[in-house]
Amino acid sequence: QKEVEQNSGPLSVPEGAIASLNCTYSDRGSQSFFWYRQYSGKSPELIMFIYSNGDKEDGRFTAQLNKASQYVSLLIRDSQPSDSATYLCACFSNTGNQFYFGTGTSLTVIP
Amino acid sequence: DAGVIQSPRHEVTEMGQEVTLRCKPISGHDYLFWYRQTMMRGLELLIYFNNNVPIDDSGMPEDRFSAKMPNASFSTLKIQPSEPRDSAVYFCASSRGSGSYNEQFFGPGTRLTVL
Image 1 (tube, each protein chain N blue to C red):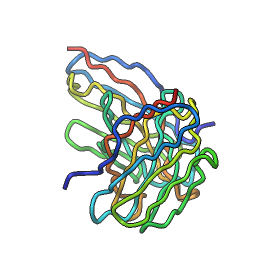
Image 2: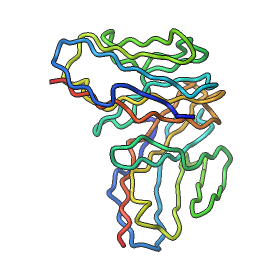
Image 3: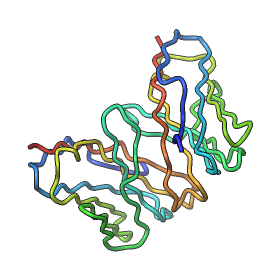
Image 4: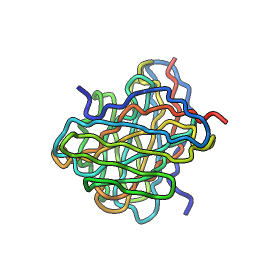
């Protein structure tokens, strides 16, 4: 089992809709969680991080964390074509003192 | 700041050759990470340094891979001898402070093709 699991997609949503990206992790020692966006041929860039249970909002983005269920999600409201990218979920595990990345979910926002 | 700098951006080599990838982290960052990304395995952490000292190299796939950080502004990842299965995009990233709460800034990556 991989430390971080994501649905590879592709996920397609119409412009203006809400895109929901999900991630599960296996290590209960994980304390902080990150969402990175990666455009095709580019390097990952951080969108948000979260380390407390609940929701964290930043503009059109909301990260949700449920440590009991070992589940992290990213909601993108009012999706734009420019949001089309691969979204990588990552966690930092205090157990291994390591970062683990998921394989990413490909999102396409259709104009 | 110019961000994390990696060179070369593209490398094509033949099986058995030595490959050296280079990275200059953002000034003032004390953590440096080397990742490998493939379609099948996603982004994998190979090794990371704190204050130029290797902390965890458990992700280094084989003895053919080695990494050094001789000073705070330079790191290398070497593959010797290279094999076709090493073909991937290699990213270097740096951060300030402990990685648990601090953003990692990624370089543009080196696309390695081993024929």
